[in-house]
Length: 115
Length: 114
Image 1: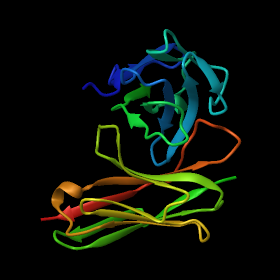
Image 2: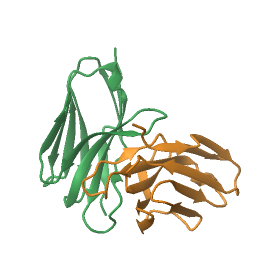
Image 3: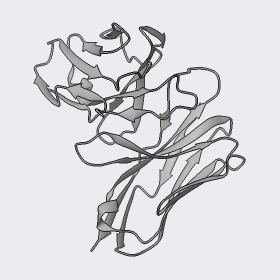
């Protein structure tokens, strides 16, 4: 079956522009997660959705970052007024239920480059 | 604050060698620990998930151990192959606090030479 799908795979943008990253989780997975992987850094948690609600937004680095999930499926991560330090690989994952015991399945990521 | 450390950062071995990757964490109150593999340009693939009540998990040539009291986990790879070349990440899930996140180490980049 299809895995977690992310688009675009690569995005180059100019500083100050807004970008939207999309994640399509595995069908039937209720939990969805966004992470960021910066060069030389480990994966950094951004936000977690259970259904359409986000019980945990603790990882969003600034108010320029927001995410939504509609219909309990597709999620978009929006970065407004992008800065060069936003350049990273943004990874999305989904799991069957909540995070406690369920394995997270990751997408291939979106590589964002802010010039 | 939970911190996860992986040593070494990079490792190069000849094909056929058995090897061990190390992961340590500062707070032993974890819910589970997971080992992932990341290939260049690709997402993460889950290899093994060890619940806090377990001491090890095995899958094929991979064996992961967990010692919560000492804050350590190891990933043992038997008879390594060039196809095992990748970055290996460990991650812990903590109790309480944030429910959603895994806390990752920075990974060990493994290169298996033919």
